[in-house]
Structures are given as structure tokens and as C-alpha cells.
Length: 454
Image (cartoon, rainbow, N blue to C red; front, side, top):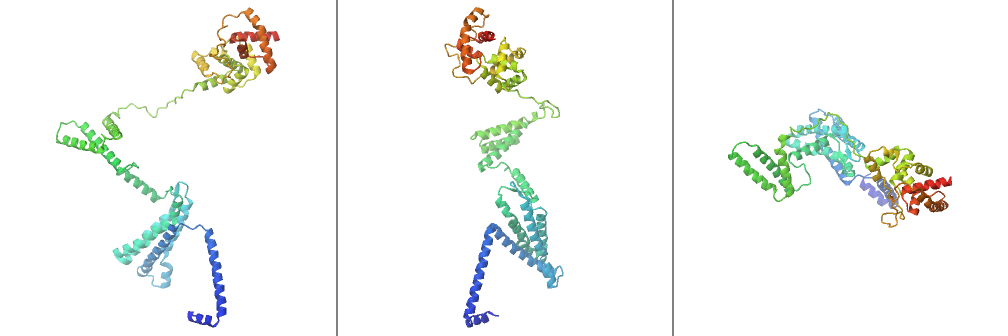
């Protein structure tokens, strides 16, 4: 039915035509609404990718036109059916290789690498190169160049962009690991190094100064190694050196002058490099262990001692510490002791020098005495600023039994008060502070108190 017949039928039958039109418009609206909903759930590629894909399809059709004529004129495909089914084999293979290259690139993409197209990418460019031959065969040199550039070459480039550009957009900092990309980056770096542009982020003025500085170093080293007299060649070198030094601006830039002098000193003394006495890398040497800090040494010494000896060492290093403080200091050095062990060690020890440190060297004893000092003192501890503080050396002479017996009632009063308050006998530090005596006398008073209690 033609358009005129359809129009005549609609005029002759207005109601059925209106019903049919309304039904068609409703179905079209429902289909359009469903298509919009479906597209909203699908993440479309960027517009640049869509435009690249459209342009690639047009260039592929341009290449297919060349293949149509080449199949007829050079491949003897006279039948239209035969030619129509086979002329676009290369274009279809090009599209298939592009899709496979994109899939391989997406599968090998990581956070730091953009992936590689693999074998499919190589086949894609191989097909593009082969498609150039029909272009020149059909149109000669000039026309073939136009057909090759707009047809297979541009189609291959656009398919490459359409299939791989979105991966670069998602990860801009990723580097491609393909063979062509690796070769391209290597050639670019070598070219920049050859041109003297390997150091980035330099201004044009700085590049000029660096180039003339290097030239000045070469000229100065050449003049220094010349053994002949002052001839025209030497004067010419001197003039070139003066010009290079002026262009390098070493007089106005201290950093440039330092770079010039450092490079020139290295060049002038390069003859001493072969005469350097360097150790052989094949000789096996024991690595030199760094010296250990003193707190580590004190920690290790205490851990190797018996508990009684460790308590004695800490008690002699901290004469004013009571039982709890001694246990805290020992715990900080990795030695766990009980209050009973502390009392036993203080009662059994009559000498201020412990057996373990008595056999140690003077340097070792001094090391422990310095680094085992108790720093967290209580506010009420007697210090050098206290005028009533006892002198530790005041009763360091021979023991006086009569004086000790005279002081025993006061010591027993202090001990009873401390035991009633804390549930244990008074320690040496408590006796020292309450009776204002030194450690040796406090030890004797503690022994007298323990003898009376027994």
C-alpha cells in the first residue's frame, strides 16, 4: 500500500485511522521509555570514544570500497555474490582484532600499568599494513596514498583509540606495557639525553648555562693538558674558554660557579683514579656491629644475673630506694622479683659492692652506675637542696655499737609505725629518711631490729 492509498483510507475511515494512530503512538512511547530506562542502567563510554568509533566505522567502509574494486580487478572475483561475501574479510578481521585487543588490555590493566593488547594488537596493525597494498594497486602513487591514509591506516588508529582510550581515561597515570609503547618510551628518553634535556623542570636560561658550563669545563681541561707553547691554537682555545665562561654566567650565579669548579676538578684529577687503593669486593669481611647504648648493656647485665645479685646491684646504685622502688627499677630492666626476695637480699648483703660487679671492670661498673639511675623520684625524697638531708658518708666509718644501741628505740618506733601503716617492716630508705642516717648505719639498724624481733 502506497502513501496515497493510506491517506485516502484514513480520510474515508477517520475513526479507525485515529484509533490505529493512537495505538501506534502509545506503543512507540512505551518502547522509548523502556529504551531510556535500559540506557540509564548501562554505563555509556565517554563521548570521545563514541566519536572515535563512528569515525573508525566510516574509515573502515572507505577501506572496504577499495577492497571491493581490488577483489574484482586483481583477485578475479567476477561474481557479485562471491565478491560480496569475501571482499571485506580484512575489514571484519580488523574489527575483530580490535575487540580482542581491547579485552586483553582491560584484563591486564592494573593500578600502575595500562595493560597490553597482546597478539591481537599486533595482528591489528599487521592487517592495517597489508591493506595499504590494494590502495596503491587501485589508485597509483598519489591516489593510493590518499586511500591508504584515509582508509586502513586511519581506521586502525581510530579503532585503537576507540578500543583503548577509556582505559587511559580511568587510569591517567598508568603506563602501557605493550612492545611499541616500551620502544617508544626508550627512544624518547635516549633522544632527550642525547639533546642534553635529560634533566627536567629547567628553564631555557638554566639549560643554556648548563650547556656553556660543560663546554667551559672541556676547554679548560684541554688547555690544562696541552704541553706545547703559546701558539695560535692555544690562543683560540683561550678565546673560546672566555666566551664559554661569560655565557655560563658563573660570575653572577654561585651555584653555577660551584658546579663549574667541581666538574673541572674532577676532570683535572681524573688521572689519579686508576691509582686509587680500593679494597677488593671479593674479600670477605665481618660486618662491624655498632656499639650498643648503655641502657641496653645495663638491661642485659641485669638479666644475666641471679635475682639476689641483681637486687644488690640496684640497691647499691640507688641507696635511697625502698622495696617498692627497687622492684619497679628491676621490672623496668626485665627482672621480676618479689618483696620477700628484696628483703632477703638486703639482709644477706653486708657489702655495698655486689659479687657480680666486683668481678667487672671499672668501666663496666661506672657504666651501670650512670645508666641505672632512678629518675622518677618522689616529691618528698631528700635531695641536695634540703638542708636537713642526711649525709650518706656521715657514718661511713667503723660501726659504733653503743651509738647504734642508743638509736635503737627511735628505730623501733619508726619500724612499728611503718608496719602498722603498711603491714610490713620499714625499709632502708624509710629508716634513712626518718632517722637521718646513711645507708650503712640503716643496714645495721635493720639487722638489730630483725634480731630483736626474732
